Image: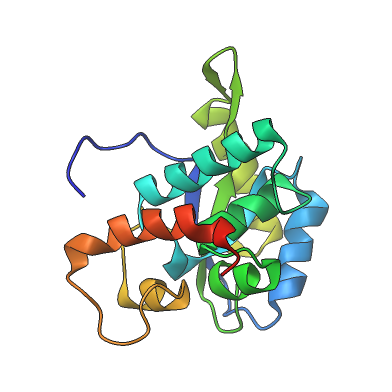
Length: 182
């Protein structure tokens, strides 16, 4: 997608010591040790770009302010919108951890206070590092990029994939259509 580069989204790519064999147990470990519900895990291939993350977060923010979230939690709503679905079960299947995942995204959903983003990267890095220890994972120095696996796992295209330059726009449309009950 053309345009300016969006700012860094608080997401750390992590690599597990061993492939995930129980996604629910990994998620529960995070839930047990996180400070609040703004920390979450996403399946590695399903985060396609910084813009993809920001679009989902902006959609969550507007629904939170309007009181129209489908999920009972902000992290669940983010997962749902990133997945482009109205159904939470489908959201977990599409964008959550699955058996065999070797990597994931540890995400801290931003907060706004008086027009400023709350939280400094340095302090978030410390918390992220602590959480990685609990998750038996290490930082993998990479940022989100679209992949065939991610596009398919999100349910964007099932057959032949269109040109790569259209993928990000398709992801943004996917988020926008999530409330159509599909």
